[in-house]
Length: 185
Picture 1: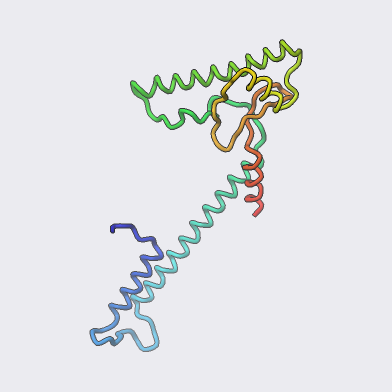
Picture 2: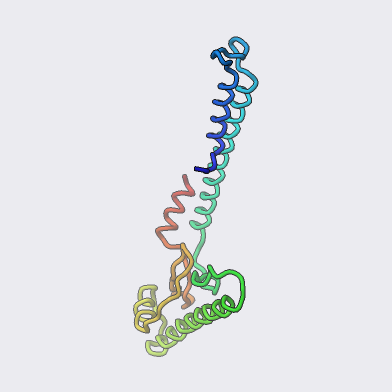
C-alpha cells in the first residue's frame, strides 16, 4: 500500500534505519563507546521535532475550537438574511446550468420570506395583534398557513422576535450551551 507516513512514524523509521546502519556486519556498533552516533542523534532530533510539531498542531486546533465556541456562545439573535439559507450553497461557479439554478433557488427563498411576512400581516389583520411568543408564531402563522421554512445553515434555527415582530435566527440552544462549556474548558 502506498499510504503516506506521518512525521512521528517517519522519524522512528529513520532512527531504526540509523541504528541498523551503525551496526557492522558482525553486529558490532561503530558508535563510540557509551555514546550515540551522529545518525542516531539526528534521528532523535527529528523524532522530537516531529512530536513537537504534532503537539503544536493539536494545540492550534483546540484553540481554534475554543474561539469558535466562544463566538457561538456570545452570538445573539439577528435578522434572517438571504445569506443564511443553506440550500444552494454548494453550487459553485457559473454557466448555462448553474446560473439559472442559483437564481431560481434565490427567488424561491425570497418568495418564502415574503410569504412569512404576508402571513404575519394576515395574523395581525385577523387578531388585531402580533403573536406574543415564538410558539404562538410557529403554531398560528407558520403551521396554520402551511409554510415550509427554508433550512438555515448550521448551527442556526428560526426564532420569532416578539419585540420587533420579525422572524430572526439564533444559535440553537443546545449548541450554544455546549459551545459555552467548551469555551470555559
